[in-house]
Image (tube, rainbow, N blue to C red; front, side, top):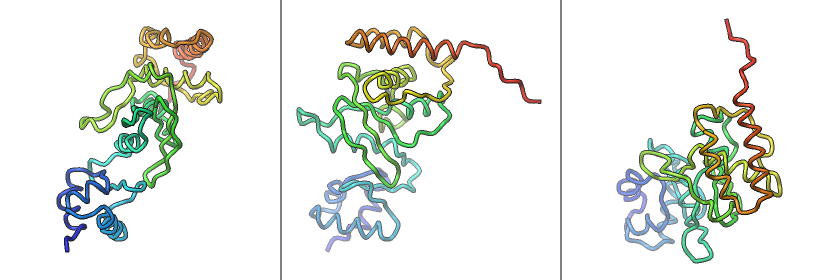
Length: 225
């Protein structure tokens, strides 16, 4: 009988620290049920971690990143057309990755066109926030491997402000942001003018003006001696 565990450790995890049961089954040439049982034994030995049903990771792998889990979660939630849902890391998570926000968000936040439920995993929680479909843009590869998409600094802040003025007022209270030199008014205006509804566009513009004014004020902190 094929030994799923040795094959996965030899052929799968060295190349892909995040993988599906189907990938393991194909590598070992066994059924998904057999692969799942073999993977469960690897987890019992502490060699891999089950993230959600059918999705596994070697979290000790030097290339493992919880952000790289995002495309796999999006693939599990197909769009209305049956294709994998589009989305990218944004909001406070992206602002933190860009060094604009020092505080580490409690969850990895993802911008999507269609609402999804929060996913809880052993490597973190993943929140999915819906934005206007034609605004689902303004991102680039989030790491050198291109394993996930990351909003640009301006788009991450725009997405955050966009959500903050909609129903629910998510992100209505923002921590201190280091936007000077990282996000320009021109960058933000390119996105603000694309908001479909005038009242929403004005509200985002006002929030951006407040943040920009705060960033332009001279610091009142006394230098340390």
